[in-house]
Image (tube, rainbow, N blue to C red; front, side):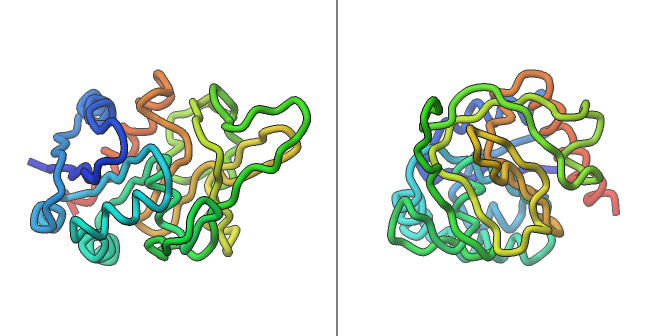
Length: 211
């Protein structure tokens, strides 16, 4: 059985993510155990909330190094929303350092007339890595669901797998780099498109297990 560990660090509704993974054919397990992260075939790091409390909770639970080790081992990894942002080095939202796995910073949307912050609701992706496993079997420019006031700004633009435009600002909406995939939007709230994205991730896990 290929268990996918869903990291529990008190930052978001883990059960909706698990339901999405189950619909995609996975066996998710909510855990804050370093040993279970090591044993899992893949890792999902969801999250809703603020950057500093997220990093504090990960460190208090002793999860920072196990997550880094799991990623370094080549396990398929999916970050969702805040789980994308904390992969980066720092954030304008707080003062704590992030995991630093992806070089770059998390930035706040600039205020503009006639746009809302947070960026909330359905918006279209512009796929910049068309061959990323995340986007298999999807239509061009798929609609997905966002809730965020901050966005990631990677130092290397090549890691960007999709962008989204809010007002005049076009920002990174997803990254894909080696075994790491992570998205700013919520696939578990993005209807059939989101389910397909989760299914694509689960398919990657099965390929890895079978190899």
